[in-house]
Amino acid sequence: MSVLITVKIQGDTGAFRQALAERADEFIKLTDGSRTVGAIHHRFAVGDGFVLVVDEWDSFEHFEQFFSNPELQTFIASVGAAPQPPEITVGEAVASPDQF
Image 1 (cartoon, rainbow, N blue to C red):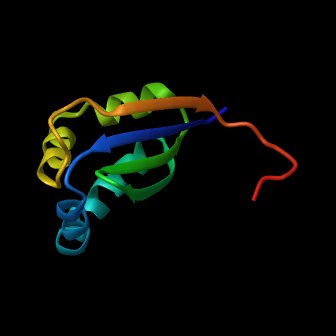
Image 2: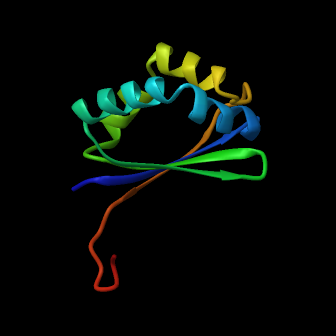
Image 3: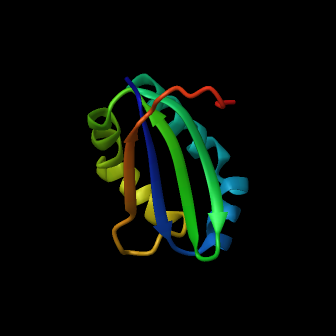
């Protein structure tokens, strides 16, 4: 059974949006790497002073291993993340009749 994971990262959303445009190749490289270790789906959302990551992974352990990589953490900081720990929420993905 897969897990749905949200990661709320406080930071400079302008710097993040700029990085999406100017450093797209780095984001793609990270995505490709995450897929090889268990990522199923991935999206970003930008709110007032935060970036929300919405992922589906084959297991929390695989996500945790990927997310704790020091190189990834350096990248996250370089695209506008505040130096405080993110808020991570994990739940088991379940099928429902109203799913789309």
